[in-house]
Length: 258
Image (cartoon, rainbow, N blue to C red; front, side):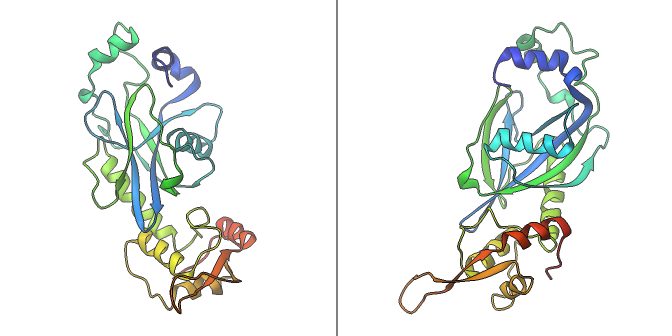
């Protein structure tokens, strides 16, 4: 929604096109050069930051809705997306924090009484992972800011989004042992040190440099290339690439990396 007219129509008639009382919140993790970040937005009507998300169209699947919401914020399509938990505790959205008078002025509504948005909402949590250097962040009529934050120095979040982020980070790190992640986070050709650093950053802990990459090779996810990268005197490590067929199969069937 980029105009006040579109926003007004969403508030007045959104229940005709979107499922009431159910929304999506997306923890979008960004990796680049050994840094792990989280994408946050700040609504124009609130002072604090929160996760991006939105409602689900009556005509789309959950995964389609999550992908649409992620693409709107990042400009990137078809990211690795994983549903991890549903959040629905009473009072999870403190409506008293909203400046209702301000939004009434913007929308022209006479009252919020009975509006489809002013009710308890259940949120389906998804997480995504992307290269944050490849994103083009976008705001809209209801969003004043959209920015990447280091995962170790996040600001306090609105609603129950601190809990959602904790659960998303836990789920992502658990899933790293069962799904291949990295195809869109590394160059097409990379060294074992680079994929080792990727997993260490995402997991937030040290991994055995001599043992960890061997597991990926044993699972036949990596192909050793007849190429080396010159990175200094007497240092020319071999380059590797993902076996795309086995990578896609592992995404569908899972794997055990431990």
